[in-house]
Image 1 (cartoon, helix red, strand yellow):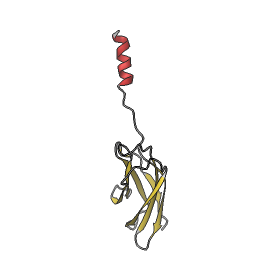
Image 2 (tube, one colour; image 1 turned 90 degrees about the horizontal axis):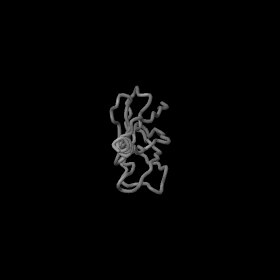
Image 3 (spheres, helix red, strand yellow; image 1 turned 90 degrees about the vertical axis):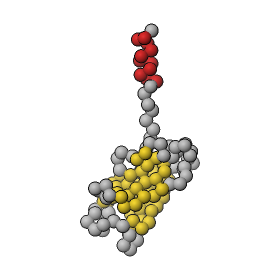
Image 4 (tube, helix red, strand yellow; image 1 turned 135 degrees about the horizontal axis):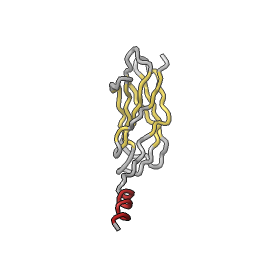
Length: 118
């Protein structure tokens, strides 16, 4: 009996890994000294209990240049695009990283690389 119970416990005790938000696309627009970043995300939002709740713009060394908070779930709007203006990108930076976050799973492990056209 114990031999049957242990494998069942191992299978049912395994956590289910949820999906972190995915950056489908991102663009940069020069706004005369600052930049506007537009990011298209997809995430299986289920409602207020689990949704993509933000994204950040980082330099290659991980310095945060901006954060866009997402204030509500987008259950029926997938994928969706939101923008952040006024982002100051230092000279010498040839790309930025976009890292999305969800209310349950936190920050995505693999940021999206967005190259600058200067």
